Image 1 (cartoon, rainbow, N blue to C red):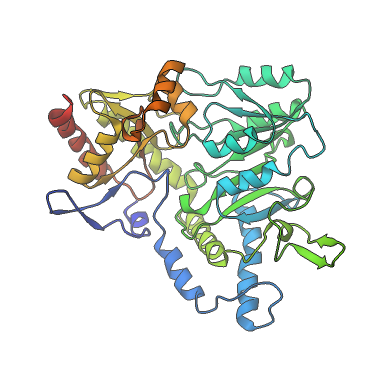
Image 2 (image 1 turned 120 degrees about the vertical axis):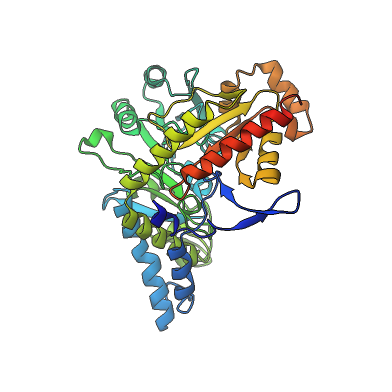
Length: 428
């Protein structure tokens, strides 16, 4: 894996500490954003010499840029195991993809119901909440989805559920949902399934299609910035028929065939849904990242990150006063949420950064209902949170999230830092 570490930008960077010294930085915040691959940055610099406007331009650079942009769709379909019936729509990120899908679902069903779950990121909760009647599938005390509760809700709505929106892997606990089994359940009751793949896409090989057609995924979305590619690009993938309905939510240049004073003829998919000048550089970065992940092999990535997760889980158990939240290493991406008894989560993250050069994420990770449940907060607790203007004092967690370039030695340094924090600050 040392050779894989060499593929990533910034892994040998030094950062300043509070005492004025410098130390090699450790990044355990990969669930938020990963650093870019060196190959990606090289390709962006190379491509910049040929970068130009796309579509309808006859200049050589315009044709090259258009070819890179349009051919990327097939590369993405191959990467995520899609089919020729699927279309790839480029967006800024997963959040925009979900909002776009919310304009397409249920256009013919005024009493449509959308099911989400308690473990969802806000981006897979709020777009549905403000457009449809939604209901939430329970998770158990450890934060894993309750499949019996899902089927119960699918039954109780008598076919009115048209979409189940669920994450492939939780950005809080790392738990991986059995999405193909869930897809079969959805299809049994006449619902489609959307899967938020943002937290799985760089850690495990996925496929929209399954040998059993009942287990196919109808729609997925993911963001490039979580898979070693910068420049703010994401994708929405789904079958053309479902995504072609209605008018585009973003209207303007690039979305039309004909415009007169009296009428508009909208363009075909996917261009109809890609209003404005597209992020060609972002698409180029995404494809370069996909090529690099294919070169490494996501099976190797998954295997190595499982080893990191196991090593960290066992090592950190020795830290006094550490509390895990239904810890385990099965059916998870490499994420560990925890707290240190007697030390606020924000203080833990700040001290790790300022005194040890270790970057982690803390808080509720844009999944407040899920974290509130993991922390066993009641309604009174939540009302107090709303009244508290100091967000650094609100309840939350510290999150470790590993990636293919992290090492066992970095985990050892983290363990030492946490032990020192307990010694120095646990009386706070």
